[in-house]
Length: 375
Image 1 (tube, rainbow, N blue to C red):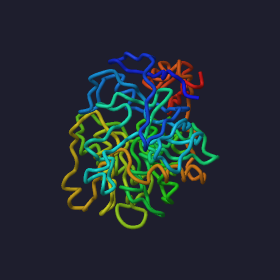
Image 2 (image 1 turned 135 degrees about the horizontal axis):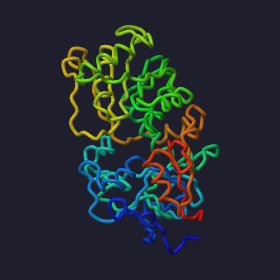
Image 3 (image 1 turned 90 degrees about the vertical axis):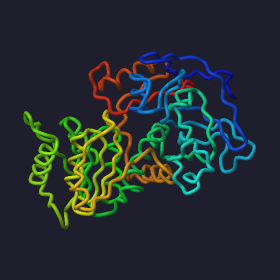
Image 4 (image 1 turned 60 degrees about the vertical axis):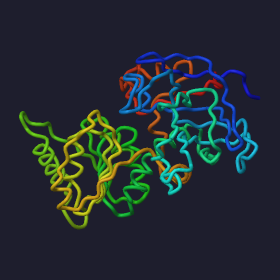
């Protein structure tokens, strides 16, 4: 039975989180209403908490946070087919217009009229009791995929989109991933699941590299410290030369790096990613850094015919493949879930994510928050 109230975690401004009741969403003929069971905290949620904006997405009114969620269908619209009350689903939180050229050609993630949970101008998010979505964006979970796993399908779909759809990763390739945070780790896991022969993790924190090596990476590299007065180009070249020697990575030919995934947004890693690739290699930028403009080795990109792509969220088929990878045991998302919180303790979950450690000093990779129905 539906509840008359819809407790929601609402951001009113920088650092101002409040739990308040909001109206229970109504559903149109092609929509379904989901009782949210589990929600993961994304770095973007924390960024809004700290800055009330990301790039040109600026909060102008209170906004409910959350977009990494799974739950149970509690109501379906009159025209919904293939989905029923009681179904367990992962929630794909971005709704394109469905009529523009980009939507019609299967690139709905680029729809200029996209309505995405917890992203302005939308004021709705999934850290609430109920959330409504078109039924085609609710993906059934197999019996062996838990609600917590289901909440992880959103960031895993980012990895699928960047590594498979855009990066075209295939078996026997060598892949390098910069940044061993949640998205970088999931990119490594996807590359490994797709049969990459080597998955090289790069990060500036040894603790993260140690985790990556035990999770999905076959090799890790800790870049050297930057020398005094050393420019970005010189530093990146020295770091890549050290990586190549330490890990015996040839510049060209078999064993060379065919795909670079940049998941940190750090300018030095952007530069290193381009330099590390073999001629004709593919570079995918998925990490959003603090700087809007980053220098790149343009002549190197041209002379080696590197393919440079940006990756934004995910598109058709990403959620389905993400769920399949977990269902078949090819990707295990459970090790990334390091903290769990009740809905009423959401503030503590955000504080831990912001600091990178919980009150007990344990490192945070991914915090999961229970839905209000669990209270």
